[in-house]
Image 1 (cartoon, one colour):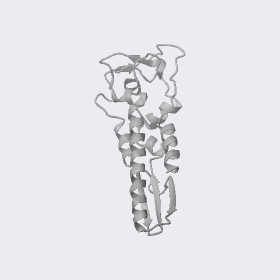
Image 2 (cartoon, rainbow, N blue to C red; image 1 turned 90 degrees about the vertical axis):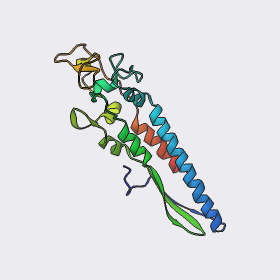
Image 3 (cartoon, rainbow, N blue to C red; image 1 turned 60 degrees about the horizontal axis):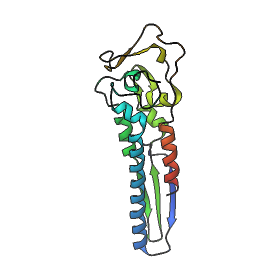
Image 4 (cartoon, one colour; image 1 turned 120 degrees about the horizontal axis):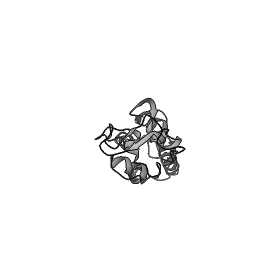
Length: 192
């Protein structure tokens, strides 16, 4: 959930016209914010990382993070049937604009979207308490050399971790994900 104590924007707009103009300004500001929020959610849902994880253990590695070795859902080790992107989606959907004061001469508002740290706190690795899979997408997830992609195996039904390294010197390819999305839309909302 967005931290309601830290707005991404806090600004007042003075209106040089009567109260009716202020009400219209509030309506237009709300409409613009909702449009931006919906764009942010659509971009999140269409991101290759999100698409690959939502597709489950048998999806192709469309994100290119594993270099042809299975997919993120099974590599990260989600349980078959899990919906790991749902908490992120709910957090993004909870983004809001709050109007603190509306008078005949002005409108004062604050906008809230989740921070990257808030998203990281609601996306735990299924096997490593205190670590975030969403953060790992950006900073790296180790163990690709020990990962065996095979349908029907492991908690995900898409692979297991071997007791010995199967391929030498293979690395997870980090990808900009949540931080880049939130930075982009914070800037857009600030310009509202």
